[in-house]
Amino acid sequence: MEPVRPKTLDEAVKWLLDNLSPADLDNFRNEEFSNLIRYHHGFGRHLRNHFGMWTDEQADFVEEVCSHAPRERVYPEDKNLVQGPHPDDASQTIIETLWTVLQARGN
Image 1 (cartoon, rainbow, N blue to C red):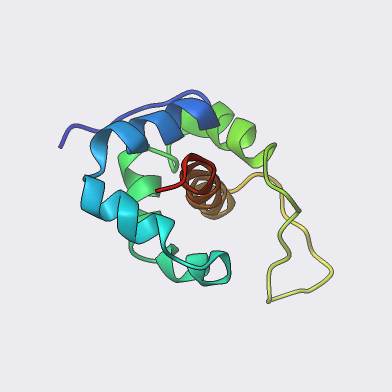
Image 2 (cartoon, rainbow, N blue to C red):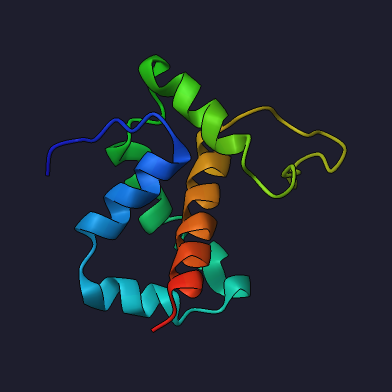
């Protein structure tokens, strides 16, 4: 699958809605919000790589997505250190936003 370079959170979520299978979207919709972190290493890694979040070219995208995060994320290595926009945070924000959109759509 060819890499995609969205520019906004909305573009990323729209791409996922258009490209994930109905079964995948249903499974995701039926997940509990508190369990979404379990998608970080598999699906989240795929998003980071597929959307090119580690590239300088996508730094503005990562920053834009992180601006929509419901909270700043604190890293366990130093509970007082809040880091700036990071691909890990961006992918989790995309995952949480996709879930929210699916909840709003209902079954």
